[in-house]
Length: 291
Picture (cartoon, rainbow, N blue to C red):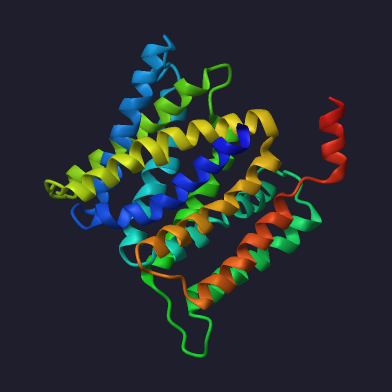
C-alpha cells in the first residue's frame, strides 16, 4: 500500500506540470499560484479541524512565514511563471534534480555528509538538464521558462534545507503543513494584489485543473509522500521522484505532445543520476532491517 500511495503522489506531481498549462490559459501566474495554495491551505485547515489538531501559527509565526515565503510563495511563483514559457516535460525534468540540489546545498550550508555517489550524480543530472534545455544539438536555444524552473528547483532545495532547521519540533505534521501552506498562500495573494493581477473567471477545464492541482497534486501528494518517508525512510522514498518526469511525459503523450528524443535522452540521464544518488546502500538497508 505504501508503494501505491507513493506512486500516486508522484503521478499527481507529474500531472501538475501539464495541468498548470490549462490553468495559465485563463489566469495570470500569480493568481494561479495564490489560488492553488489558498485552496490547499483551506483543505489542510479543515483536516486539522476534523482531527482536532491545533495549528500554532502565532507561536511559530516567524518560522512558518519564512518557510511559506520560500517553499510556497517563492517556489510556486517561479513554477507558474516558468511554465508559461517551457514545456511540461522540460519543467518536470528540471525539477527532478531537486533532491541532488538539496543534498549539495545541505553539504555547504549545514555540513551534511555528501557521499561519492552524490558527487558523481550531480554533474550527470545537470548535464542531462543542460542537454534538454540547450536543445541537444549545434543550435543552442535556452527558453526563459527553463531558467525560471531551474531557479525554482534551487528555491525548493533552499526550502528543504530550511525545513530541517526551522520547522517547529513537537508539532503535528498536519498542523505544520497547514501553517506553511497558509502563510505561503497569503504571501502569494498579497503579491498578486500588489501587482494588480486581474482575476478572470476560469473556464471549466481551467477550474478542474486548478482543483486537481490544489487537492490532488498538493494536499494528497504531500500527505502520501510524508507517509512513505515515515514507513520507508527518506532514501528509498526519494527514488520515487523518478516517476515525476515519466508521469509528465505520459500525460503529454495523452494530450498529443510526444516527448522529443532530446527530452528522452536528457531525462534518462537525470533519472539515472537521481537513482544513483538516492539508492540506499546495502549497509543502510541492513541497519534498518536490524532495527
